[in-house]
Every structure is written in C-alpha cells, then in structure tokens.
Image (cartoon, rainbow, N blue to C red; front, side, top):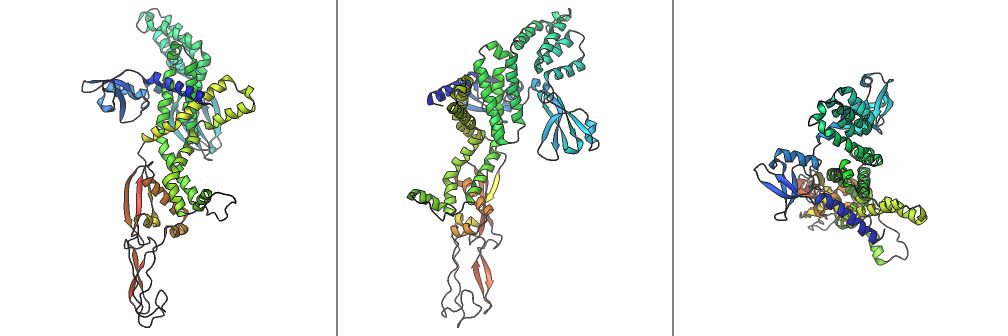
Length: 547
C-alpha cells in the first residue's frame, strides 16, 4: 500500500468518525442545569461519561448519578453500558454446554431438558442457529443456563413462528404486535403479511397505533428491496456475537477488526440516508466501536500481563554465546556478549521490552497478516486482485495505521481492577544494596583445627571478610522463576507502562531480617556472624504491587 492510499484511507476513517461524533448533544442534570456539547462516544466508563463543552471547548466528565434518569438511561444504552429494551427482546433463554474433553463449547436451546438428568447413553437435542444437533449425554460435563442473542438459537422464521404461537393474533393490535416482532427479527415477508392483516380491523386502524401501519409497510418495502444488504448486516452482527463469545484474545481482536472493516465498507457503499436509517447502519457501526473499546479496556490488561511474562521468560532462558560468528562488527559482538547475562536482561527490562510488548499485541489483533496476503496475491497474480480487494486493502491499511494509537488510548483508560504482585526475591540486594559489614574475629593463639577459613593463618590476624555476592553470581545461581520475577518487578517500577502503586520490604525469612546468621566455632565455642546466603546481607525481600 503506498502513502497516497494510506492517506486516503485515513481520511475515510476520519470522515466516518466525524460524521457520528460531531453532534450537538444536551445533558440534563439533576440540579436543573443543562450542558451543551459533544459527548465522546468513544469513551466508555461505568462511572461517568465525557463531553466536550461548546461554551469553553474544554472536556469534562459527568458522573452518571448527576444526570436525570431519562438521559442517564438513554446514554448508557447508547454507549453500550446497558441493553435497550429492543436488545433484551432479541435475547432468549438457552444453555451453554461444556464437554468432558474441554475442547468444545456449544450454545443453544436444549429441546429435551429432561435428558440432561437422564442416562449417559441418551441424546441431548440442542437447537443451534436453527439446526437441531444431538450430543450423547455422557459427553456433556456441564450445562449452564444463559441468556443469549436470539440468532444463536433461531432463524428469523423460527423466531417468528414461536412468537406467533404465543400471541395467536385475532385482531388488529395482535397482528400489529406480531408484525413489529417479525420485522425486528428479520422475518420481513411475515411481518408484511401481519401488517396487512391488522389493516383489516376497521375499528382499530383509525386509532393512533393503527395509523402507523402505512409507514411501517413503507419501511418493510425498503427492507424487502435490500435483502442482500440485510444479509451483509446480519453477517456483521454474527461477527459481533462471535467476538463476544470468543475466549482467545487475539482471535477476538481480529474478529472485531473484521466486523469494523465490513461495517465501514457498507457505510461507504450505501449512500441513501433512508436506507441507512431503516437498516440502522450508523447504529451498528457505533455498536462495534463501543463493544470493541469495552473489549480492549477489559481484556487488554490481563493479556499484557501474560505477554510481558512470556517475554521476560524468554529473556531469562537465553544462553550465553560462546562462539561468535566470523565477520561480525564490534557492535554486533557486544550485543551477543550481553546474551544470557544479568546486565543484558536488566537492560532489556529497562529499554527493550516495551517495544516487543506492543509489537506482539499489534501482530495478534492487527490487519498485517491480511495485508500481507493481499500484497502477495497482487505480486503473484495482479489480475486476480479485484477492485473490492484493493478497496479492502485500503480500509485495512488505514485501520492498521491507527491501531497503535487506539491501543494506547484503550490502555490508558483500561479496567484497573486487576493487579499483579511480584518480588525481587533473593536478588533484592541488587536493588537495595547491602550495607551490612562483617569482619571475622582473629583465630585463637596457635590456630585451631576447627577454625573456619583455613586455621593456618598467622596468630592475631583477622580472617577475610565474607564477600557480597555479585549480581552476575546471583543470576547464575537463581532459577528461571526467580529471574523472571526480578525482571517483572524491575520493569513494573521503572518501565513506565505499568503502574506500580505499592512497593514494600519484608524481612528475609532465612535470617529474620538481620542480614546475617550466627555460627559456632568448634575449637573455642565462640560465636561468629556469617552473611545470610539467602538475602546476601540485604536483610529484606522487596515486593511490588502493580497494574
């Protein structure tokens, strides 16, 4: 993708964002005042919303309890913090089936719930996206009741038929209600039929509700004439459902990206404002943005913790380089010399891990793989690269270009309920230093066979002071978990990405916080002090709580 295409794509996304964001909004407060400005629809927080004021140009947060109930409910629905009544109506009771293998999860409506308590040889019948599937009871480990999107269980026709049997309409209001539901679930032909049946009620059709029928029929005609568009939108909604139920972080992120890209395609191709309104295309695009933000704000912290741990673990498993390749530069040799050493790992935790961390996340949830596929196709067989492929490449390249900035924003506004606690362990002395000074007493006159440190020294001379272990010596002796935790603690405190909100010292368990241990001298019975081999005289183990 060249720079011109990237710039055009960036402008496209900016224009789409501006079309939904640059609105005049009014917030009514409990104290009777009003605030005029533009609500930030990209900011989703359970405690407040954010609005840029027209009066000052400044941005302020308004806590939800300060809004009147009507505005609070409306904005919480709009920002995806709660479900609308329409969304609730499009959910049904179902089950999540977990299997004994642990590798499979099925969501659907159990048609014979008694089979869940029956013999292991019996079959459990489950309705999944309109198809009846059968599973041996013995393969199911657990069945959890859940409330799920209607499309995970029924086809539009099936949903309509179930509601029809419940309502059994025999007058204008009944047929109208059933037609409204049919239109809502996508059973448009059936909805049209019941609107027409409702019109046959001569008394009802002159009521306020009855007079809505003609406009509803006009809407249905628009929907019926754009069935392919409806199929495309249903595909986007299916992607959203898939993303919500996806456990794998990277796959969920890529599904949201696919849904977003497809929604942008539809918005650019469908120019008719009436069609956009009837199919609620801007609302769907906004829903994707809201759900995607919530996903990253909630799931990004845990994934970042796991990724940085993996990067640190890979660093501590590095081996020292013994044989250097011929012809390398002095700079390359210096870099290789640092591998497998304490200082090399410490420098990585200080400067290199942040870039690797973000690159890893970008690769998992970004579009680069798809862009590489399109590029390879264009280089191998340009004739196979269609205009639609090029347009998709433009959209994906634009999204990829802005992804890092978006992730940084999601990270800054992340859910901060979870935290990690790590410690420097026996390497605490590297951070705190070791101020303990120990000098051995001189040996007894004439020396003693039981004296520590040699016994053959000159009478009256002091034995050597025990030495402080060096960081490299500790690194060589420590196990992988100890080294990994040391690097994580160092990075949490100094890396600048995570927030270290508490650091404290606990007495070394081995020496009780003294930094030394008393030892008995066999020949004289006198006691001497020996540096604690666990804390290396630091006296404490330092811990860090971070998020």
